Image (cartoon, rainbow, N blue to C red; front, side, top):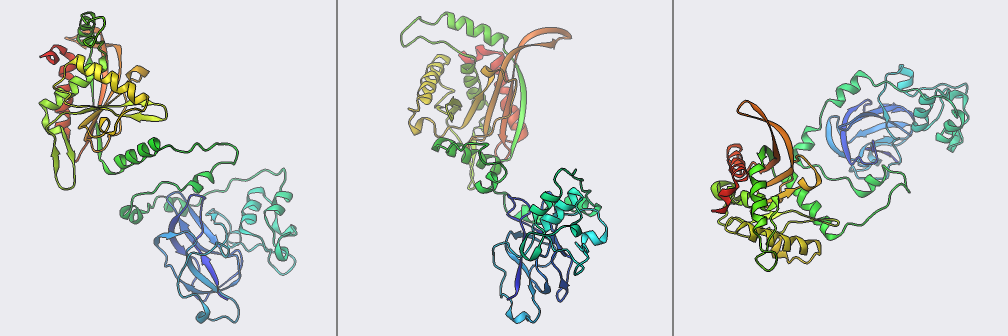
Length: 440
């Protein structure tokens, strides 16, 4: 029966690759260990050796084909007396038994590249491709070994026994390998988005017992799904600005001092409350940025609803402050405290954290100076807020010490162009640095 030659896996995570070159032709006889093809991935070019002897009956996948699935049939070998008529009719995925594990392309003498090790017997040493590679690394002469595998074949255990204690020799990568590494798989990249590693591929990279698996809860699954969707489908760009907080901090201190000590009217303003109000007013002044992309058209929102990320155990919620531009600072402050408390207790109703027209992520309380946030679909913007800290600044040619806060606006370029995003960020900055404007 004809022997199938399969597309090998170059690593535990490989799912497909490029059949870069055939080194044999139809009708050519090959022996076990002969290099018959070269396979490319985005990281390496590898040689494929034949395990069995025979004649190349048919090449099913031509050289240069990209996106060839692992374990799909790429050719077949005919044994003595077999004809092409007895060969398989189609290339189908099969267990990888007829092609050896690939070996790295390396500079070597022709006899070594072709795997033609000689012995005093029948002129050839039969060894698995892995054994050949290990022998080259450890400087072991295969001709001096007696194989313990089937039919006297030299296997890995024989090399380990012979090479115990010997120093390994690094192989050198050939010029052709370097050129191949520079050739990207452009066609495959153009037709589909890269998929995440399958679980078995990830686990194959780590030794068993060195990790534990913590099953995902629904929150983590949803966060992962939405943020992958965001980074894959939304063209992000980022705008940064530094805001001076001195006037805001002074106003906050005066307003908190005037707060009733208790009752429904009591409040305690935070810097984050001013940030929420300033962003809401900025969107009121720059309504073009208060929008959402859909394939049918742009949603220009008539309300300004600001979501604020709240960290909870195992993830986060983004409760939404509705009509944020119309509410006073004290109203925003008390509502935010209520929403954050119920978010941490996981008692928010869906309508309290769904929707919104923009969002804020504030890591200033953790001492983070600045960062870039991932847009929360279907929003077109998110404001990342850093810590307020004293810095030396130049004002009118003189050095001053001021409390500064760095903010980064992430924008969906389909909705918010650079100039529009800059207008929104400058409007936000103007309210932060002149907070009295938020009170009228």
